Length: 183
Image (cartoon, rainbow, N blue to C red; front, side):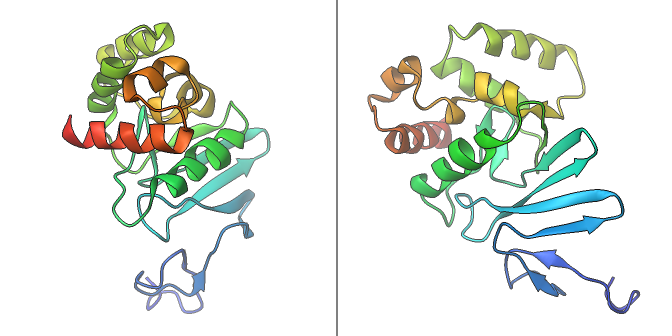
């Protein structure tokens, strides 16, 4: 693309990205037409992941790559439970609740099955499972829905802590991720 469009800016969080011209570390803001885009460093899945928070007037969306999935999160390939916890439960959780969530992969039904296995009494999760099972479209979600249904974003909930046998939120997340890896 950069060969076809001289001067094109290619943003990314990792120098392994071919043709990247502008490395992001999180916090940078730039415009794409009328869209205001903020880079968010969201480590955990990898050690260089960047998510993009996009604002267009009152509309808000976040593109989460492989860090946050609907009712789940990415595997800890290069990152740590501490980093994933910060990305999910500090950075994403601080976004406005009506922010639409666009994920990098479609694992929703599998993630819902896992979430129900660790949080079977969550009525909002059951409601979302019914909706997702009746629909071909599961994306987007919202930050509000993820805060209510995603076990990786509910690590301070006593029901989730009980299932993992941990109370420290980072350890709860690590235990959940290990459970999901074996699910």
